[in-house]
Length: 231
Image 1: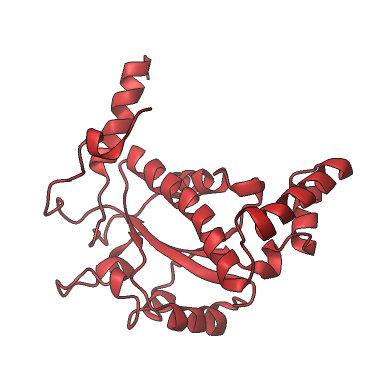
Image 2: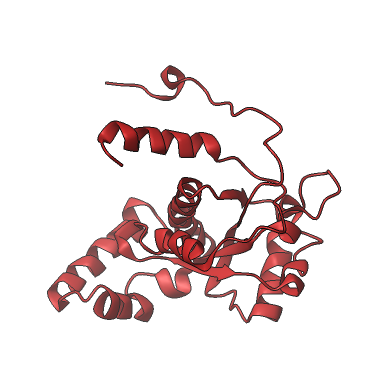
């Protein structure tokens, strides 16, 4: 863009463009280059301690998507009788959140991550181990499979938001989906995708594509003075 004002307007336009798209145009597909950019926005997202406690499943097989049909009610296009996001989205994503099997302090996974991904020196790894243990056991009290998965899911939502914003900047629609039965989703992921439920729990789904029509409602949000307080 030519100047800061142009960039600011581009950002606001993208957020005004984005809505929770219930039905996509099944004939329009996102290009590989564009979707790789969307995925890169997730990969480069920040996370607490830089631990990246997420895995991303891109479910493109129609047969695999249909495995979720009966209980992923949020991906069925509301109640309008359509195939919904599962049947019409160009790309369908499931975010998995790591559990305490990998995210517990001093876990083998985290030691490997700090050495091989972050490439930190040993003295820094030792410092982070101590800080993270204090964070888990004292500061936030994040211990146990469910609590750690919930903490991981909060990191997932950072990556999710960045994916949807990147998509909107590219003129691509999206819809985040929490409308699914957790237990049945876990069962399908284990049986048909080989996902170990002791290590990963589904956090959120998100569909991408191009809208089949204009949003039925205008975007509404609280005014700024009801949202933000300055001190």
